[in-house]
Length: 149
Image (cartoon, rainbow, N blue to C red; front, side, top):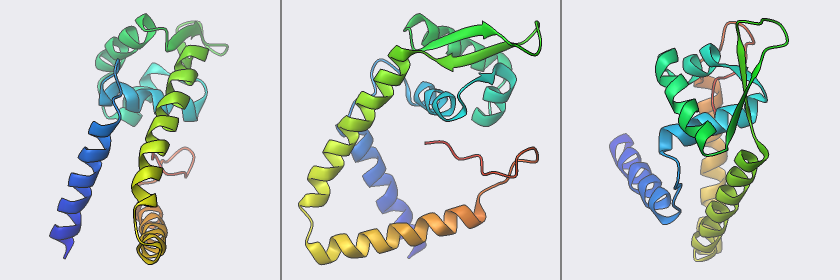
């Protein structure tokens, strides 16, 4: 059963991802945008840790996102050697538009389901989310889960 669920989730995830383009950003850049959106301001080292990438890789990714006008860098108020990363208005607008397009596509799909199946899906996803919350890794500093979008 676990294999079937895993395969189905992968197929559905890929179908959903393919139905709404994230251009001009890659999936890893999108994840960085989600992290920045949730964090407000964050330094490069922390972004790299959350993404599981080296600071140099995170820096190059932010270079590309800055070139698109989605991310801005500013000197930290606590350390002159540190840079704080934030979404720009354009970055927030991009995420809002992407979320709206994904919600529209998902609404269309869910609306095509039988009402009883929709109710079952909702119950299953709520339980799935609770299980994920219970099993999510915790950060040492905050005690909060590291999930992003």
